[in-house]
Length: 104
Image (cartoon, rainbow, N blue to C red; front, side):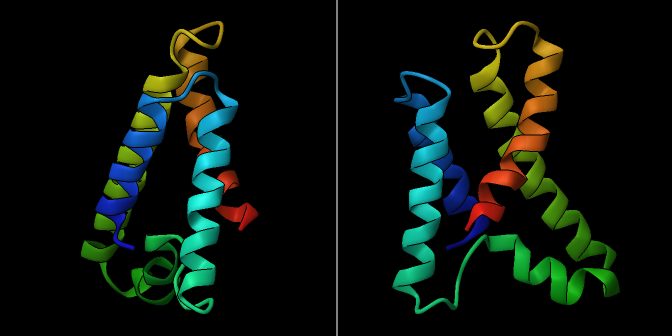
């Protein structure tokens, strides 16, 4: 699964989510499916690249950061209006997305 495909999947689950817990479940289920369907060869798209090559390449670090930031923006947009303050939505999105992925 590519980073852009994960972004598309996030948009889809967030668009139809009735509550903040639904996207968490949907993303975790999606990543579990990717991981198990690939025989545990694939998981969070930028994780392997970041761990293996990002220390040697500013360009790779930038690409990974941009993908991660775009996912956090989607989540923050979803949380805005569902949490007490917009600043809190940004902070929660930045903290929560890595936790969703690390569950896997």
